[in-house]
Image (cartoon, rainbow, N blue to C red; front, side):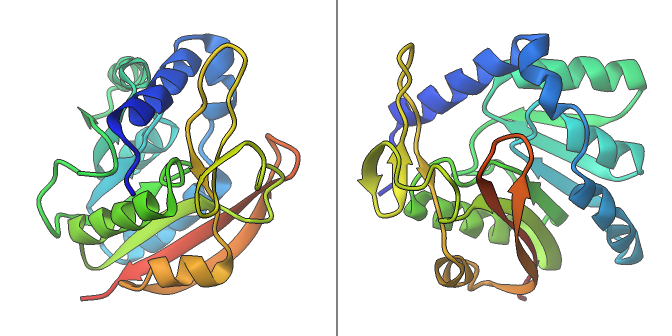
Amino acid sequence: MAIDDAVSQTAVEAWDKRWATSEGRADWLEPHPAVVAILPELHARGARRVLDLGCGVGRHALLLAEHGFDVEAIDGSLAGLAVVRETAAARGLPVSLHQGLADALPFPAAGFDYVLSWNVIHHGTLGDLGRRLGEIWRVLRPAGLLQATVLSTRDANYGIGRAIAPDTFVIDKVERKGHPHCYCDAATLVGLLAGFDLLTLSQQLQERRPGSHHWHIIAERRG
């Protein structure tokens, strides 16, 4: 089942709150080394038009614009988009910004050479994750690249909180409702990526949160 509008709004509100303060943004300003590392491959492939899906405060959208790509960036959080807009203007970088969610992307089919979605598409159920990967497949050109992260079942938070769907849990906070996170083992993730050729798939331990295991994915859209 797809997460409903109320749950989606809960997630957006949580990120709005984080992005509204300098403290909340502090750990999300530097591009991840794995995204920096893919830049030569994108140039070698002649990639031009790219999408940062769930851009947050713009660390990767701005990086991609600095390296000469035509960047579209989308996020549900107006607070995050405001930060991206201000930073892009200060640096003189062209980034086209959109407010929206990953479930129904406002872009035509086969329009992007590369889609990046870092720490985003696992916010929901496994069904939501599958639909989002389907949307990414739709907007990518044949042989276009997807780079994404998805939570692993080895993550320390797996099984904690309210189970609302298979491998999907909500951890409520005292001050606010939580939003869903889904977790994948390797077999599940490979099945969800059936429309792609996997180029690399590895589990990485994130330093920001102890026990935070994410799958790092680079995949190529089949024709």
